[in-house]
Length: 280
Ligand code: FES
Image (tube, rainbow, N blue to C red; front, side, top):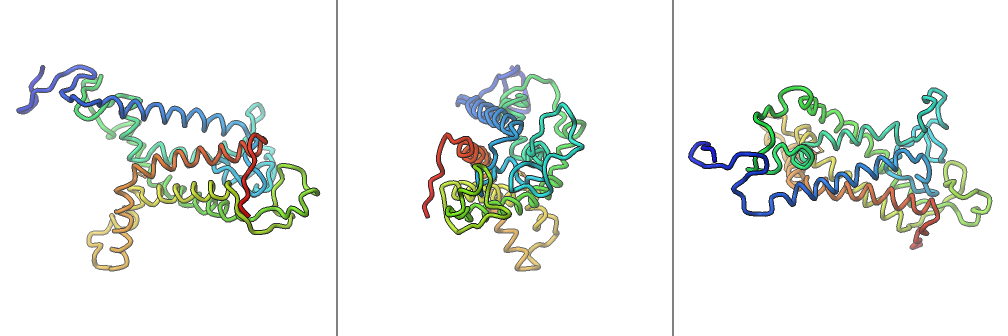
């Protein structure tokens, strides 16, 4: 036992005075984040089954180059390194991935779960000193605000995908188009709604709440100002974002599951494992 101030604290990795199941939270965090990383990496390298007619997996959006009708610029570019399997996701996923990796909430969570730094609050860590994020490499986490700007741009594409998910190929014309090709750009479409529409819409909504509840977004909206209450509109926006910010942890987890399930749903539809349910 070592004395710290007026409180006696046990010392040594994992030692603590806490009597609750302090290890449960970092363990669940470790398992869930590991599952997500493994699945997202696998899905990103597939380069196939990422679209189903008007549905596009969020892992592949925006599809800058690719083989689906959702692509923006064209097929696989000639400058793609030979030997590296081509996947449209590899071109864009680093941005949302680093947005999440540098998130203030996730940092607190995975520092505990993956690095035991510390394993949990008031639990001894396997290091003698704590330098925080003041030096390399962790000081680079400060780039988070720039990935937040990128995330805002990604949201525009995801909302466009959500809008497209309401427009289905005209079934009277379907026979003329091979399976896997969507209604864009030359296929007649009609308004409708499927389970996939709700999946993509829910995913984009959750990602939007996750992004606008971000600490850096809150700073952008009003946190950087000395006296936000001078403008009623600014104060109202800041208050709204602050309320969302208080729930940032919830949005972080829900949106994580949302984006994974959205990719899985589109993938299973594209593979023919499940059939999309059309409501109308
Ligand atoms: S703090 Fe979590 S996304 Fe910015």
